Image (cartoon, rainbow, N blue to C red; front, side):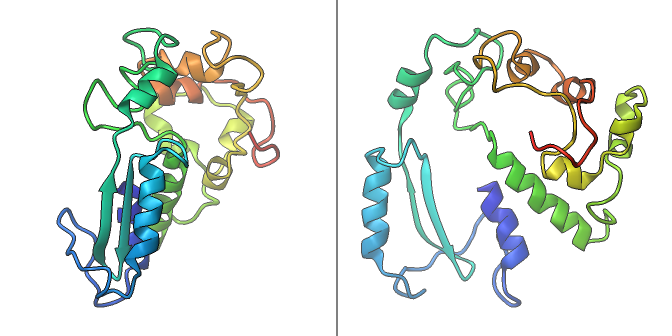
Length: 209
């Protein structure tokens, strides 16, 4: 929903309703859509044929024209139970992922990259950020991270394109291995500080990780 909200802000034509907490609804016919393919895809999502998708939402011309949700809680539990450390966020702990402790609060995972990119684009358009080639570390000044010549050259572009140069390894070990950077991060109270305090492995902008 957050990603759709941001895309709506960016793409809504002049005069069309902007996304809000109460988007106007319309029939698919009124907005020129064929319901048959929508129902067919929804049935496949409900059956888990495309992974465990939690919801389908179609918005056209600023109107909600189709919305369905799917309960795959049992499927998630079967996949993730028993692999996580209780009380500490972990991808395999059903108490935290994908839903937070029995609520409908959902972990974002890598979709956050797209949301962050959209937010940066909006901030640039509003003049709140000069552009993607500004240095990144001034935005984290409150963390008091010791200076590093390579880290201090890191730009927002480097961060957005995952070429920050920070040493990070979540590929060569099992996800729950204590040597896995992501697993260690998830056990920390402050994830941002943990990432910023990692040593630099490459010059920014050179290597995709």
